[in-house]
Length: 370
Image 1 (cartoon, rainbow, N blue to C red):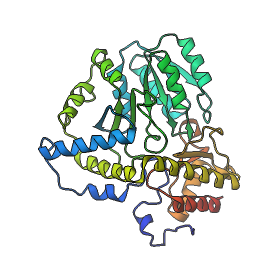
Image 2: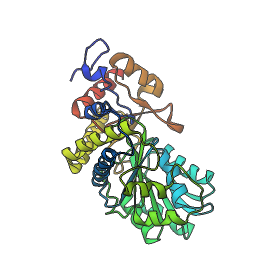
Image 3: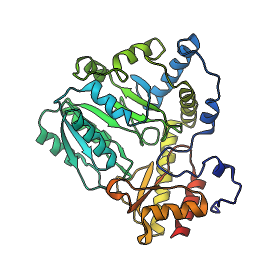
Image 4: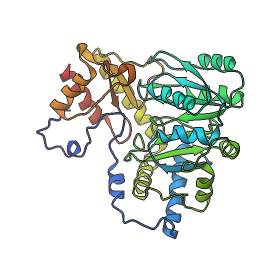
């Protein structure tokens, strides 16, 4: 495929189709169109029917029979909402910290007065079941665990199913940051017995930023009734009660919910397993292309992400210089690293509304920039 240039009238380029960062991702065209629907009253029978259908689709996409609730906010709101609803000051938690976002989740717990025990590994490595079990044993009884399923800063996917089983054996609540995994890779909320699984719709769900979505177990709903944090906007109780009536506790982001509804239709029409398989294929083929270019991928083998790849910036260039070189010549936008990797690594997203042509063009752009 020929690399697009800024002088080529490519409709996909003009509509942001060449955005290859880990998020926000390209918005599905049906989600774009859905936002033009007329506004409706948020306390109307029409809204009640719409919300009932939307929540059913969200449950199917999360593989759960439980609650899936939605708040206006970014994916990061899921950290705070989970903490204030399920825990109390002083509670002991074990948190995976293998990158920028796992570290933020753990740090937020500390800010809220939790007793946080970090499982820390070098960025680019995963938290293995062995490391997690050792940390759980050292910590003693814990109220909850914080698991970053897919670390967006490093392109590492932690073995969530195995880590969750270890936590469940110790009767700990399982809070999962699935911001860059939900909708892109296998995630079984009920099958893996998870309690709080949150994501932002601007990633693999192919929507504009602005909604945090959380799948919540009955165990978590029960825990929320006896926790010690004050809360209002993120309070599970009123939101869950409103959901039973087909509404929301506060005014929802109606246009964004229209977009999410259309995007979930696209996911379910393609088939969840096929969506997962597509992401797996695109990730593997992109990394194979980097390998041919002798570009070093950060994530250790066996734990590479299906939604985002981080790699060392080639030829001694800074990540910003490499990013600018590609954008200036092709219009393709890749991301720089984060935290300690901010100047040394770049990241490419291969999640959401994307297929092989876009990834091929990205590889060509990387090759030309090298």
